[in-house]
Amino acid sequence: MNLLRSVTRRKLRTALTVIGIAVGIWALVVMAALATKLSAIVESSSTYFRDKVVVTDATGTPFARVLALAPLTIDVVQQIEQVPGVAVAVPRIMLPMNPDEPDNAFQLPAYIVGYTEGADRGHEASPTRVARGRATGPGDEGQQVVFLGSDLAREFDKGPGDTFEIRGIEFTVVGVGEPRLLTFDTSAVIPLTEAQAMLHREAPIVVGRELEPDQLMSMVIVYPDQGVDTGLLAQRIESNIPGVRAGTSTDFDDQYGSTLAIFSTIILSVALISVVV
Image (cartoon, rainbow, N blue to C red; front, side, top):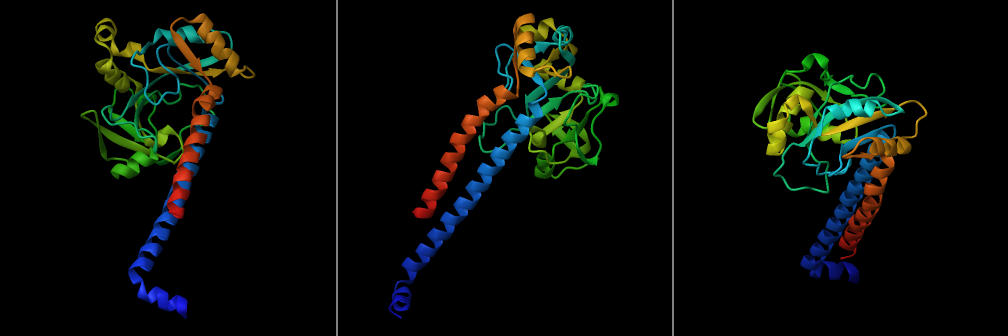
């Protein structure tokens, strides 16, 4: 009875206490969910890169959120395919969707991705999964069409047949992907030729003057022959081809694994403090 009497007499204090506890619990749930999702994204990405070698210009880092400014030239693809142990090398372009937008560590960055579907010749172990419509293909080269990742399609409420503006250019949406917990979820996949034109416009002036758009790319995705160790292949590529850097899933884990552990600890610590306070 005394407890109930105390509660009724101090309604404001009680209300504030209840609200504080509710907010703390909410913060704990939200932060825990965020940490879990980030962990799942890192794990999915590590699995995706496990059977690949990612090659970029030596001034960049294969798995950096902010990509190297210096593009590679398309002839590097042929050079890589001459390296023993390489099954196929596929040119790819990745550009930030919003280059002026500040980096947000709490979510996947949005990218413009350019490549030719099927260029991996069947070596891709994690092929595109389509939820609606279709993926882009070799027949789309030269066309302004786009395949949207699940998060991007949901954010802008887009589906097959809609238009989607990228860098001031209207693209027709041909399909939407299934959620994959990869950067593809927040990416707009367009034909390689269209992405090369965008990269050419953003490349350093000296590059733009000396090279045509179809000679440029951001990176090369390398698929090894069966049984070839990706770490050894990465070393072999760097030894044989000057001016490039090759990374594997081990490099990805080293770069993001420890960072994620620290980040998750901070998130949960903040949430627990919110509950206590």
